[in-house]
Amino acid sequence: MSSEHKPFAMFRPKKLIHPIIFCLLIWITNRSEAQQDPYFSHYGFIPSFQNPAFTGGDQEDGRISLVHHRQWRNYNDETWLQPETGVPIAGSVGLIKEVDPVTSLFNITQPLYIKGKCPPVGGIGFSMLSDKLGFMKRVSALVQLSLDVSLSRRLNSKLTFGLNAGLTNVGLEPKYFRYKDPFDPRIPIRFQASTKSDFGFGFLYHQCKVRSNLEDFYLGISGSHLNQPDFNITSQGFVLVPHFFVNQGITVKMNQSKLLHTVQFRYGVIAQFEVTEIVQLRSGFSLGTGFRVWKNSDALITMAGFKLGQTYIGYSYDVTLSKISTVSSGTHEILLSRTFQPFRANPCTPKWKRGTRSL
Image (cartoon, rainbow, N blue to C red):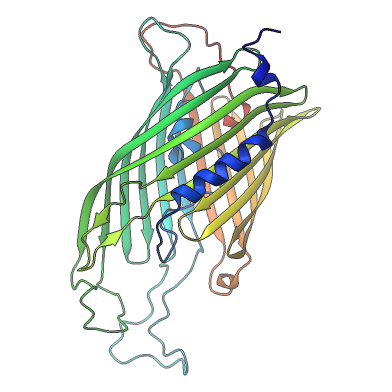
């Protein structure tokens, strides 16, 4: 065994936990009143949206993904009723139906090649997000870039650095907004929207070879809205505070199937933790379950999907476990993903093993 391989032969994922916690304590310095970034139950299938270091991670393939997320379906605005008596408030416009969060995401990534160089040096991608929460709308367009640093050929491991940059537009529609104080100067009287620059970064460690039945271990950390864009849609502004993510995953090989294990920790102010287990069958079907914690038990996740050729279709239904279950009918999410032959100046045979969890 050569000396350059010895440090990686003794690699233990647990050794990275303390440095990650230390980094998070340094990063988390801002406060907000609510979680501002949307979440996706299929986060393991679209990781480059939250961590640009995953961009181009399919290596020999490009990938285009569409996700539609409908959170807390049938959640209505019933503030037109007096909470004590249930009697309609004078002058109210009445019940406003379906103010639940609705999020759509378009994401495309492919390996990044430099002329005359093979394998790819990283990845490049683009994401377009549309997010509606009550009377607030947000649209983001971000370009993503990642660069790889090879660590060990024996373990097929690498460290990837990622960056995303673009524009985010936030607008507030106060037409039906019900004020506690109708003279509050922070609430606009007409539609207001503002566009600001938006930046994020990420790191990713990926190791293809772990043990005979374990492969594709990865650990990523990332942050979004690091420049804290301030949108002047109210007299006191509206700030997107930094959000931070830790993603970990590994694939367990079984007789006729594979188990895709993923974990995500999110922090915007409210800490969220999510774990997902998906069994991928050789027939192309996949079944999974997960659990999300947000202050308390938030949701039980059920997932199903099917892969046909280069196309994967997935669906998830989140059973709400919090008190919101009394006024909503759960969360639905649909994923459509397809790989494609990426553009490259000089065709070559990739040396990196494709990640199995990319389906």
